[in-house]
Image 1 (cartoon, rainbow, N blue to C red):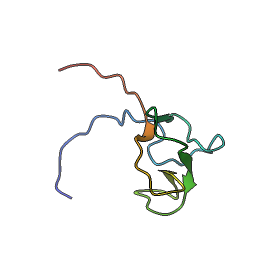
Image 2 (spheres, one colour):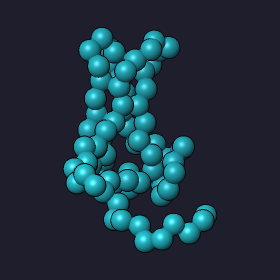
Image 3 (spheres, one colour):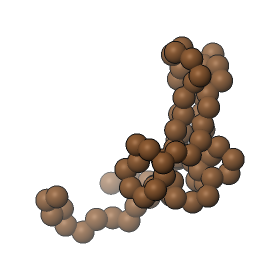
Image 4 (tube, rainbow, N blue to C red):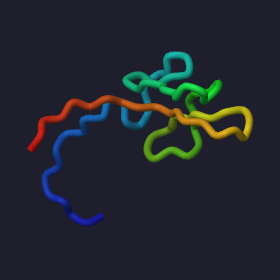
Length: 79
């Protein structure tokens, strides 16, 4: 990787989903789904991860399209 200088601290909490899940959700993350998206399943997985041992998945049990996922709201200072 090219050198990018001093990096600011990571503002994302639990970025690698390593903390123990609360049922089907990772701490510091929020599940969301748009109206009409039906039932979306959320949970912890060990495949398709970027770093660490875990990832967070969301899916449906059929092939219907849906709008949903996980998110984290981050407060930033402009400039």
